[in-house]
Structures are given as structure tokens and as C-alpha cells.
Image 1 (cartoon, helix red, strand yellow):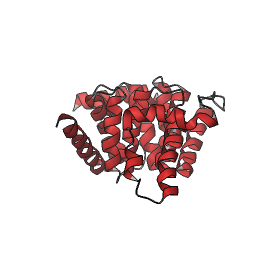
Image 2 (cartoon, rainbow, N blue to C red):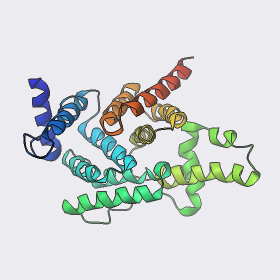
Image 3 (cartoon, rainbow, N blue to C red):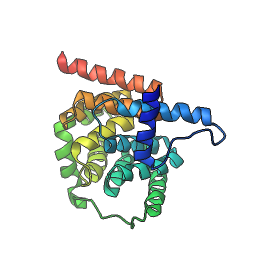
Image 4 (tube, helix red, strand yellow):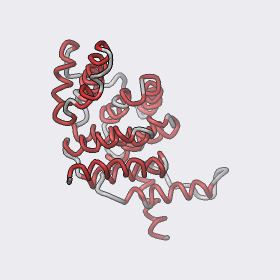
Length: 255
């Protein structure tokens, strides 16, 4: 017990520059449970760095639209060495999964934290492709990881939709976002797995992106560590669903 409490105090200080809750506030019992579990236990399981963990946390909080906590963890991410651009890219790339309005909400919370930290906005641009090149640039990243699965799956739709849906995926998710600088491909794919796990109800996509994350350079242990770290922020049922999807992906790979 003392080790857990001590680890919590150390990690909380690193992330937030403060001590964990004592007896102050309206709900000190709940806060002790929360802080000792997350910062005294979960943060010490797996191979992820503190910077990786905070990018995972920021991603889950953006997906769940828990904006006060997102703002706090943007500050924590800065404290453990994440660059503003890395944090921004982690949030930007949520857009294809959660939609533009929720992503804009997350961006607003992020920018409040940046402003409070004295970071000048806007941050440097990270786009690497011209508008006319979105499809080819996106396909260059998409095809090695995911092949032609989406085009094949929806080829029985009316012609206009059978063409537009896979093209939009390639141009938007990959051309507009995956091609951006500021995060390496392995980290992007790892955060995509976390995004889908936090969404819930996206088990098929979690399975596909677990396979994609491995191809991009993530070990299975790293994927498991990211999903476990996301659990206190998204809940145990979504962790179990994501783990089941990951296990299905890994069974296929060994079959």
C-alpha cells in the first residue's frame, strides 16, 4: 500500500507539479481511489513512456469529450516532454473517427491549455501534401497497412457510393491526416487503436487497426500497454471489447 501511495505521489508530481489530494475538497475518498489507481498502479504497467501515456490519455479524453480533464492533461503532456505539435496532431487525427464538431471542442480545450502555458498560436503547419495529391499520398500510407479492404467491402453499393466511400477514406483519413508531420507513423497508428477502443462499438475497426499498428512498428506489448492505460478513462467494458478484438486479430495472424 505504501508503495502504491508513494508511486502515486511521485507520478502526480511529475505530471502536474503538485501533490495528490489529501483530505481537502468535497470528495477526497473518491479522488484517492482515482489517483492511487491511475498514478500509483496503471501508470507503471507496460513499456510506454510518460509522454506516450499522456498522448494516449489526451486522445481518450478528446474522444469522450471530457474537456476539463483534457485541458489538465494537455498541461501534463507538456510537463513530460510532449511537444505542442505532438499533442495537437494527436487531437487533430481524431477527426475522421469522432467527427469535426467533437474535434473542434477538443482543440478549443487544448488551445486554452496552450495559452495558459504561454505557447503562441497558431502552431507551425504540419501538412505535407497539396490538395491535388491527397489521394495518392493517402493511398501510399493506407495500402501497405490495410490494402483494398474497404473498396472491396462496399463494391456492391450503387456506383457513386462504391467510388466515393473508399476514396473519402483514403483522401480524408490518410491524405489529410496520416500524411502530416509531427507524429511518426507508429505513434499515429497506436493512437488510432486507442481512439477506436474509446469510441466503443467499433470492434471490427479495432481489430483492423491493431493489425495496422503492428505493421507500422508497434509491438503487441506496446498495444496492450496503450489499451490498459486508456482503461481508467474509458472504462473496463471498452478495454475488454478492445482486447477481444485484438486477440481476434492475433489469432488470424498465427492461423
